[in-house]
Each structure stands twice: as structure tokens, then as C-alpha cells.
Length: 590
Image 1 (cartoon, rainbow, N blue to C red):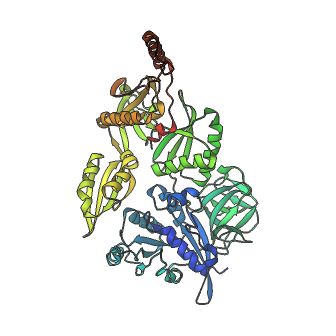
Image 2: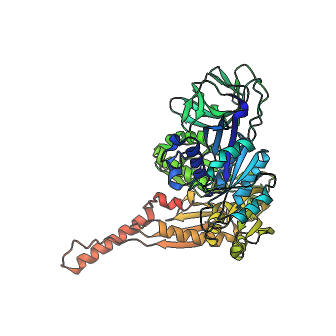
Image 3: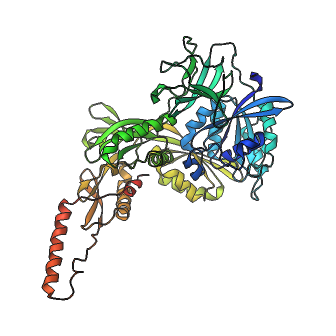
């Protein structure tokens, strides 16, 4: 294969701007028989299909003839939601170019800017593409003007409709003429970048790779980070299914079935080379750090080992997850799992239930707080149960984020009120054009992750968008909220909160629990405490079983005796009975 006839590119965009639909159209144009009537061809997981979002990068090799010469277009479809930015970053490292897709009805959004920044960090060639021009509310001229300001070095923005196919036919030729071929050395020793991995029940760990230098065949291979050597079970390309080939040449994107059964043997960002040759490793990827932490316990404590096994398998597909064991006196053995955001956590929970038939209890979400103690220690705290006694705290700090919101001017006032409510501090306000405002704020990370995104979408009817990046720590007065049901602490519902907001949070939490916890045959007090002081309380009234239903008249004293006996029984249950909590109670944490 001639290296000059390979083009590696990704499709990047804000969520719902049409990446996967455009990918479907490109596949349909280049290889009509490959698609037939199927949509969302590269969204292979049922959760992606049902939610209509891409959560995992997906590669495919397309064969295309341009001016009588064969070309191989290696396309990578990427996620659009901010929680999966790391998937975009990994995809771009395997590419020389990117299609920057923008919705003609919404224009440049926060994730448009974020993804453009990632592409520029990789020095990729950017091709701006304006989608949905078939819609009546499309404003292509305004979007062209914005894109020319953002990427003046690029070609003229391409106008198309991925839904109808209008204008898509021109894309393959523009990709071939604009994006450079891979620049690797075909005669150098093999160096291939591992940019993703999955676990196959028969082939073991399957590494998704881009061959940077040299070529890859069935000879013995070596992973430089984990010091693992192996003979590949199979090598090949994605069509989009895994299709075996005899070799992979410089610049190609494909896969290697390692045969390794240990899911830790292959690391994303590792360099794959020939066994016995150790060239300079490729730069790889920055270490991803989770933004959100959740303690997870199996609903059935006997399923702990099954939970660990399931999580380890999910981790192979999702290198952004981190795990560590944890224990709770009331919940037993569990895992603390680090996520990139709430959507990431919710999809993880759904995968546990659907793919592994496991039901889990999720504790309250937390970020990584920092506490300086009076003895001079610096503690990183990610769960409420580890929060130290207030008398030992010298200073407490919370992580912060720089937030960018792109919005139409109509929603500016309400968004500013929301940002102030979330303890935000304005950094800058900029009009990108007459219809678009860019707000820059500094906010606590916990507010960004748990409340900002949904609130912004609600206020702006979906027209505003959010992007953020971490921005150090800030001193804040923190307290621990503990939840008691029937005078028993429910550890998964405990949380760390800012002292100034603790009363409001406690009242809201108590009200939510009153609506969620099912009624029992005894009264259940709900108490939210800070340091032993009750700051919010609700009561779930008992439902009354009609113990006199079997009586048909007769002496009234008999009826009174039964009611008195029931009253005594309820008093006993109130003191010693246990509250049964369904999984829905813990879903309020998400």
C-alpha cells in the first residue's frame, strides 16, 4: 500500500451537530453495500443507539477511487458530550486531519471551541463543515463568517446536509486534497500507537492502533509500557467490523488481537513494536484524571466479586475509569470509581445493569477536595466518610473550573443569575457576533459537574452550550452532611457541602427522600445532620393496615383491642425495624 494514498481523519463537533449521521452518509457514498438501510452504523452499543449519542470512538477504513487512483480513508467517529472529551483527544492523536462540524441552526458552540483547541494541539489540518443546511432556520452565511474567524487558515467551509445527503458527495475529494498523508518512515523499526482497546472472549485484548513507522505482520510483538511480548492472533482493519489482513503498513489504522487475557496488559497510549527492538517510544497520552468520584456497592453483597470482574472488563473499554476498593459498615465491600462526569457515571451504571445483570447502590457524587490539618498534613478527600473532624481542620479547599458558555443574548440575564447562584465569578463577557455571546466564569467544579449543564440547557431551551477545564483549588468552608433514616445513618447519602449552602441542600435532600423512600408500617424520621446537629427533618408517615377488616360488627372493645395491639407493634417496629430502600432512592445521587 502506498503511504501517499492514506488519509486519517476524525469528525469532531458539539453534541447533536450530526457527526454520526455524516459518518453514515460518507459510508453510504463510498461503500453503498456496507450500509444498506442501517443508521448509526458506528454506534455499536445499544446504549448509543437508544440514547442517540456516541460514547466511544469508532474507526472504519473506507476504500475510495479518486482520479483513477485508489485511496484509503481511515475515519474515526468521536463523541460530542463534554464527559467524553478524552475519547476525542485519543482519536485525534491517530489522525492528520479533522472535519470540524457545525450545526447551521446553532452555529459555533462551546464544544466546537473545545474540540478545535484539541485539534490544534495535535497540529491537524482542519476542514470546517456546516451541517443541516436543509432546515428552514439554518443560517449558513452567519456560520461561515464565524468559522472564517475561528479557522482562517482552513479551506472554505463546506455546506451540506448529512440527513438528506446534499453536498456530501464533495467531501471525499476535499479530504484527499486537503489532509496530508501520514509522515511515518516505512523503513524504520515498527512503532504503532495504541489509541483504544477492547476485550474479545476468544481473541483476548484487542488493541486499536495506528502504525506510525515501519510495518506490522504476524511476527512476535512487544508493548513498551507493560513489557508484554506476544504473538498476534489476528491483525486487520475496521470495515467497520474487524476484518483480518496479512499486514498493516505505515500510516494505516487497524487492530491487533494480542491473545493476552489480562486486561491490564494493554495500556492506551502504549507503543507497540517488534519483539527484540526497543525504539524510542511514542509520546502517548496525558494521564487522564477523574473529575467525579462515586462509591459503588452491589445491592446483593454476595455479588462483590462479580462487581469487581464487571468493572475490570468495562475499564478495558474505558481507560478514563479509575477504581479502588472501599468498605462501609452499613454497605459492606464496594468500589470507589472515578468518572469524567455524571453522564459518564450514569452510562457506567446502565452498562452494569444491562451487560452484566448487576444492580448497584451509588453513593453521593464527590470531587477531590483538599484539607490542610492543624498537624500540617495535606489530605485529598473524595468521600464524605473520610472527611476529618472539624476541630482538626486548618483549611479546606475545593477544585475550581474555568467555564465557557456560548449563548444567544436573549438568555444572558438568566444565565448570569444562575452562575452567581452557583458561586461563579465572572472572568469575561464577549460578543462573538450580534447573535452569540461568550461568557467566561470561574466556578466550583462540583457545581459544574452536578448542576450547571442541565440548568443551562433548561434556561436556554437547549440553545446555550457549556465547556470547562480544571483551574486549581480555592479555599472554601466545607462541612459533612449525614443522612439518618429511622435514626440509622445511610452512608451512601452522606456528602461534603459548602457550609453556606448546607441548610438549603439538607432541606432539599430531606424533601427528595420523603418523596422517594416507600412508606412502611411504622413512621420513619428523616434527619440531615452536620456534626450531630439536625439542620433538616421530614417524616414519612406510616401506612395503616386495617387489622379490623375481618371483624363484622360485634363488641366494640374487640376492635379497640386490635387497634391497641397494632399500635404497640408499630412502636416496636419503629425502634427495631429496618427501612428497606429501593435502588431509586440512591438514583437521586445522579
